[in-house]
Length: 372
Ligand code: HEC
Image (cartoon, rainbow, N blue to C red; front, side, top):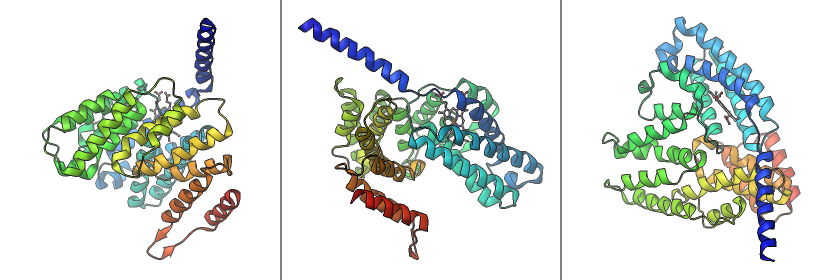
């Protein structure tokens, strides 16, 4: 009896091992396009650091050509990613849109607007590269960025650039160097909020709880205001909880546990970052039921709402919508709809009241009908 069970569970383990592998996508087809957009970005980056060089006639041709190239490749990337998990598909669409707008505005001499879209472009690269666990650093970008003056990029500019270049270890080193250094003022820590970006990298990309635990212990040696202290203590607790995760729990089960007492506040941040990692890992499995998939998207929607960094704006609505479409009669569908409605409405609320575009209103009506 006993040995039968052992054989069975070994068999199940082997099976699930295979399942994870076969469900995982291989991104080789992305790489030529990624390398091309990166090469163009490295050319534009130093020229976009100040207005004078961004608008200078001498740089005009190089900037325009490279923005056009990025827009072309972004289109290809969007075609490839359109078949992916929803988050990827969404971000690749953003990439295409930002690239196209940057190229168009630059061509029309609208430099301020072009610059805005270039910045958005960096953020899109960064969001996508940190949206899923993939711990392999790129050897390719290491070579290309060698000649860049990374130190000219401001306090956190270098760390962000390294992260968007998929130099994750070097980005983490850089954040830790800054956190340790005496130069980092409390104002900078509060204003730029680098801890969120750091935690996303350490936790979601690298799946590493030890590094941030050390960093937090280091930060706690400084005199800190009460609210920051409380955040750090809560994050420490979450990181320890993840380290003692019960082995038998599936990714979705563990994510549920992490999300149980989550509020949309900063103390819940580490729980939601970890939960979103496990939920995305769960989505990579080939054979999950529609209902589990719907719940996974629902939980992801809540995660993105509570992480709420500019990096991930917009993703939550898309997750919630997908969740509703997959299982409109599930117990969580009504709540998903409420959250969806709230985030869409907020997105279109301005000084003149709510201004929902027609297609957005039609989508809301359609989803409401499905759920109620
Ligand atoms: C839709 C998601 C997505 C967006 C948006 C995105 N990337 Fe990527 N990128 C990927 C994936 C997936 C890989 C492959 C990762 C792997 O090795 O598993 C990748 C890999 C890379 C690589 C490594 C290539 C190599 O051969 O090592 C570079 C460089 C890169 N991306 C640059 C960029 C730049 C620059 C941007 C923004 C202009 C960007 N990416 C936007 C998903 C994205």
